Structures are given as structure tokens and as C-alpha cells.
Image (cartoon, rainbow, N blue to C red; front, side):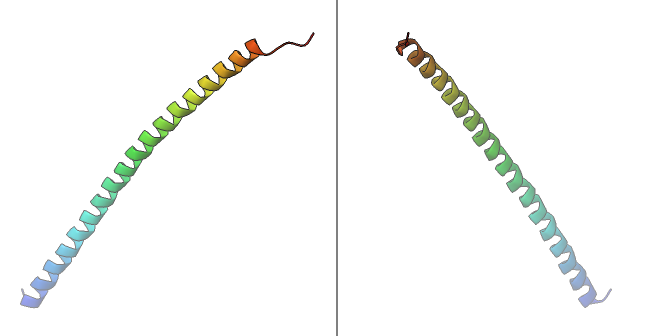
Length: 70
């Protein structure tokens, strides 16, 4: 095989490996982002539940203490 052809094949193989590595890195980054969004979503839902519960307890408290008109 010619020297220049062997070198060209080597560079093509190297470029292909680089593309594969970039694709794998992208998959890893997407998984990290998905994990972060899951954590943020769970925290948001817990905060939402807490706010709803607090609002309901405050409403019940003020309903009990509010004067009723005859």
C-alpha cells in the first residue's frame, strides 16, 4: 500500500473516532441535563405542595377567626 494512502486511512480512522467520542460526550451531557432537570422538577413539586398546604391551612385559620355577619 502506498505511504500516502496509509496515512490518509489513518487520518480518516482518527476523524471517525473523534466523531464517535463527540457523540458519546453529547449523550453524557444530555443525561446530566436530564438528571438536573429531574432534581429541579422534584424540588419544584415539593415547593408547590408545601405552598398549597400552607395556603389551605391559612385559609382555614382565617375562616375560623373571621367574624360572621348575621
